[in-house]
Length: 133
Image 1: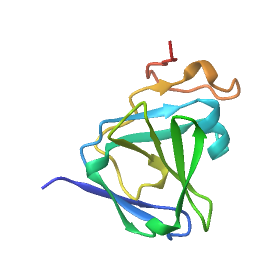
Image 2: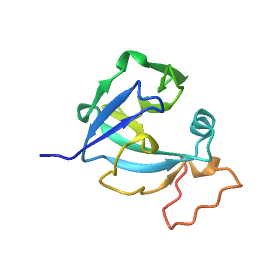
Image 3: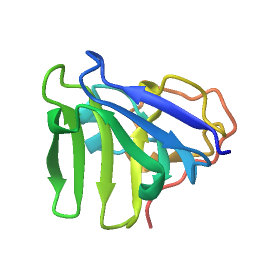
Image 4: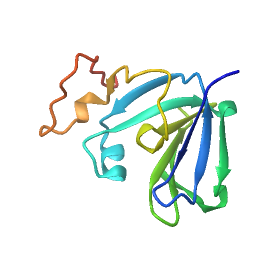
């Protein structure tokens, strides 16, 4: 039997489960993630859509089209940013690791969109720093 990790928004209105394994975990430093979360970066887990399901409040989730190719899902009650999906990664949903209730099957593997990182945060790790080409 595969491991399952649950997650939810701040108020608990939207809840979900992810069946592991995840595809990847990375810290995203793009300006859109930073603005959507009000943070230096956001840590995402890539989950195959077939391994993701809502357990509560799917009707309370709204999708905001942040670019022509991508959407970000958030709770309409508390505003928690929870999910990301894009034509660039079909069949995959990206889940904010900070909103999970338990550990994943892997640690973060990279800093992505590093070229957009803020200068006031300096990571103390040896993870690869990748930028789009």
